[in-house]
Amino acid sequence: MFSRLAALVLLATVLPAAAETPAKQLFGAVENPAPLAARSIGSYSRGCLAGAALLPVNGPTWQVMRLSRNRNWGNPVLVGFLEHLASKAPAVGWNGLLVGDLSQPRGGPMSSGHASHQIGLDADIWLTPMPKRELTYDERERVSAVSMLAPDKLTVDPKKFSQRQFNIIRLAAKQPEVERIFVNRAIKKALCEGAGSDRAWLSKVRPWWGHDFHFHVRMACPANSPTCKPQAAPPSGDGCGAELQSWYAPPPKPTKPSKPKPPAPEITLKDLPPECSQVLVAK
Ligand SMILES: [Zn+2]
Image 1: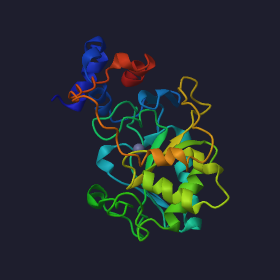
Image 2 (image 1 turned 60 degrees about the horizontal axis):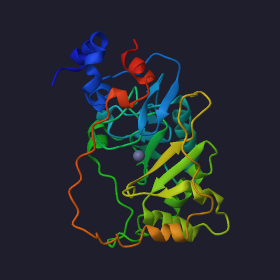
Image 3 (image 1 turned 135 degrees about the vertical axis):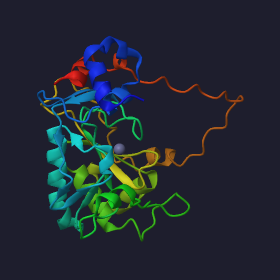
Image 4 (image 1 turned 135 degrees about the horizontal axis):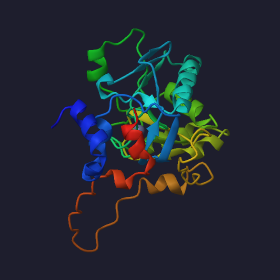
């Protein structure tokens, strides 16, 4: 491994040679945002971020976790949204929010953890409330998040997933600039069961694997980002019927012996929008 500084020099001088290097190594080596106009470039899982804003590690009603990862960067629209959501959290039963990963300083693929989070419009929020005191750097590295699931993993544990968790997910989903929220199927089920007659917001809350320790908020492409690639709108309806059931269906039996899948090829700069090469080296 070369040092981060060496990586930067290498990038700046012989960028074409970096064409085959996994993009996660290149973007992971840069510690500061690109000093360009703020914008999200490309799609949520194939893109990068210029002019990122920093979510401060401490706010009146939030604390950022896992500081060593340096992933508390986002489109200013995302950072503003998180500050706003955190300010509203006490009104729905939270002392404050623990915030997990946003994006790297210049976005892009990451060496661990996420396929998306590449353009500064995705954020993970812990389903564990913020304690009343400021956590130390070490605690923020080590404290484990808590799964909301019952041991059968089919439902939530009501001692962990309570009205408080319901409220914060609903509050986030009701913000017009939020496009999707990802939660475990058991959490979606609990939301479906608890929503009563106010159900329009449920269409944005999508089941996904994992997401039992945190929920994932995805912002729509903002006006500041003309080359941000939007996703199709989620299906209409609350998603509480057949769609939710499909997440509980047993996996289909293989008809022939399955061959092990080759690993997915690494994302390189040529897989990302051309603008991302400029974002990577901008000084
Ligand atoms: Zn996430």
